[in-house]
Image 1 (cartoon, rainbow, N blue to C red):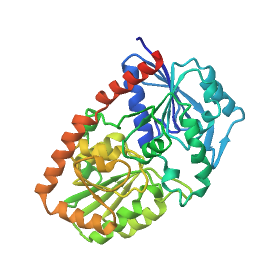
Image 2: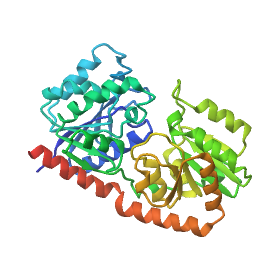
Image 3: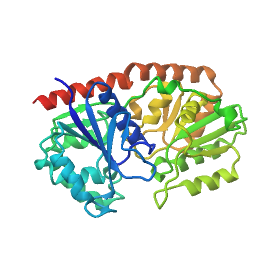
Image 4: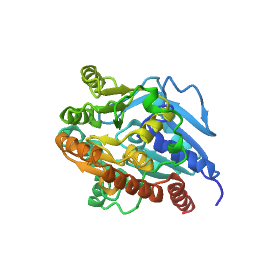
Amino acid sequence: MGSMRILFTTEHYYPEISGVSLVVKNIAEGLFKKGDDITIATTKIASRDFEYLNGIEIIEFEITGNSVKGIKERKKGEIERYKNLLITGGYDLICQYAVQTWHTDIAYNILDDIKAKKVLIPCGYSGLALWSKKVFYWNYFRKLPFYLRKYDHIIYHSANYIDKTFGDKHGIKHYSIMPNGIDPKEMQMHTINFREFYKIKTKYMLLNVSNHLKLKGHSFVLDAFKILNRDDVTLVIIGNKVSGLRGCYKRCAQFASNNPGVLLLDNIPREHVISAFCEADIFVFGSKVECSPLVILEAMSTGLPFISTDVGCVKEFGGGILISTPTDMAKNINKLLDDIGFRKTLSISGQNECLSNYTWDKIIHKYRDLFQKLVME
């Protein structure tokens, strides 16, 4: 089969930096390099002043929200324009990345009208994971199995995460498991001396990379750092600010102002982030809700041991330690910092596993084989 016309729908895309945007960008550009015609439908943002990126067309929509909180169009007619793209765009296949967001929730009620093959990557169900605290999502997930059956295929990032078990419970059989991945060449772009550039003088450096959402668990990591009570360690947190009640930047900044061992960085170049991975001693992650966290794979790819909450599919990865409390995190940070042999063992284990199983070159082949099979049916 020749090239395919594929539309990816996603709430976030470059130049927004998040796990979602990086994953979709890697999949889309990987398929483009294999000859497919790729289009991205995403949220309009002020910092995106281009219509094409690396050969891929980007169509923006002034739409926000989801069907539970409310879908809002900042410009009249945007929802109808988006529906029209899905129905009449002439694509061979439409792949929707993540649920509980406007671009997927709008599609649910017009799935029967879309002639293209339809693929959904749920990327976890955060509303379901926190159901006890978010009862207003009850009706959403009551209806979801009905919509899942209308897709031609479902892709899960893990065989053991909540979206897969939810599908199993409701008899969803048309699925594949496709893990997230990394680009080894990108992760070798160690272009600066990170510690020198950011004036880090301590012997050890802990790293956390995640935007300042409360669910990302920065408070968990900061509590662990406080318990750690060492003056030979700097904790570097790299993540963009998030406004509103969901954000935690103000609290993190207040903690950092009272603790010289904590350095907050936001909106720094991607190459600097990669250099941080390459120079850190331990990656620390306290997130509450994840599916397949890309930052853990990025840490593994550079040989950086991780200490993480048991979130998403992290338990499937080698090269790290799972913990449940800030005290556990602090205890294991001390253990790793004081035992260079143990750190080296985890480093080698994680890096070998990542480069053997989680590179985009290998994963893109699986996506393309699946998409071609679906289109030819």
